Length: 101
Image (cartoon, rainbow, N blue to C red; front, side):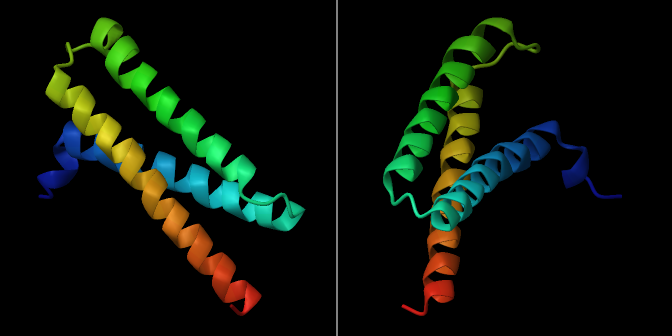
C-alpha cells in the first residue's frame, strides 16, 4: 500500500505546489499570447505571495482544523512559493523555446 498517498501533509504540499505552478505557467502563456510584457506576471506573483501570507499565517492559523502551527503554515507557504517559482522557470523556458531565442 502507498503510505505516502495516505499522508495528508504530503497531499497538501502537492496541492500547494501545483496551485502556484499552474497559476504562473498560465499567467505567462496568457501574457505572451496578449503581448503584455512582464508587468502582469510580476503583479500576479506579488498577489500570489500576498494571498499565501494571508491564507497561511492569518486564516489557517485561526480557522483551520486541526489547529495549524507556525511550522505547518510556513511549510504550506513555502510550497505555494516554490510552485510559483518553478512555474515561472517552466513558463519562461517554454516561452524562450517557442520564440527561438
